[in-house]
Image (tube, rainbow over all chains, first blue to last red; front, top):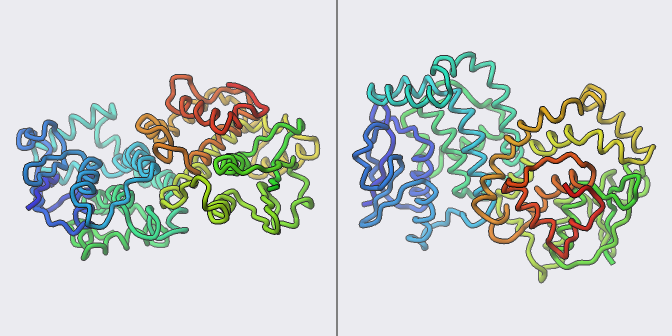
Length: 227
Length: 227
């Protein structure tokens, strides 16, 4: 059975990493079963066999693959008879970097205290130290007045919003890995925070509902906040 | 011969519309010759046969197509034996809306006086009135201190910059319509303004050089400012 090391909170069933969600949705997309092992930020030694310090880490027989993009490519190559993740188009990479350099940083600032509050104590120490160094201020200062920053966040979603008015999924008529990349961000929020990021009349909200329902409600059924 | 109505400046050979550049590059991509007829913003009646008021308008025999995206789809369908523009992936649409809702508005604010200064007098009146209404301030106020806004513009390009570090073109190993969509914006700037938007060590600059050279230097040879 495929194993996936999956970031967990103080509640071991709270699995909130956006990158791990990409991998879990990709596995489900291909109909591949996997055991998702809970892992904490500070358990670097547990995944040291992968040659790096971050999850997701996928172990499939003798093969170990880290990095969600590499995992998607691995699954495409290793399981060619399963539904495609549609990685070929160059624009998938553009979508990925938009999520990672535009969407994630803004979202992190909105969710940062919720993330902190849901970690085990040793991860809390690690998270506070590393993120406060990153931002040059305290977590509490980063999180301040997040309601006021919501309009800016909403505006930043404009290209995604219009795309999802025109077509059902980011990847077109059916979901692809680009959908899982974007969805990972929203599922990160949903698993860790009760702060509503989307209005119910938003095309992104409607798309997220479809994503939550995919693969027998895999994401819908995850421990989180149904907002 | 295919005809394309193409936005022109006071110098009739200055053809600066980003949307027209998409169409011209798409035609060249497919090896299709076209006559590009100069057109001014205020010559609405000349293209009224197309049922709308904007360029590009393509006339191919009995067929009239407006909107650069519709033109690309038309060329794909009508000329199936020519090189593909790679429109199928849903992420192409996301890239298009990123360009139109994020890149273009910021770029317009940097270029607005250069555009104004290069128009025929009747277009200047139209452009000033419509754009001042849009921004709620004078063109001169919009253009103010553009050097100071350049770092913000540079930052906004981050997902594009990283993508073009990882692969040769937005569409992957070979150019597609998504490249022409993004390039249209930079060619708009190059045709109308001597204000340098890109540093020479930027991966976007290197990609733009490749785009300028495509199709026998079609874009390179256009009237503009080689910055």
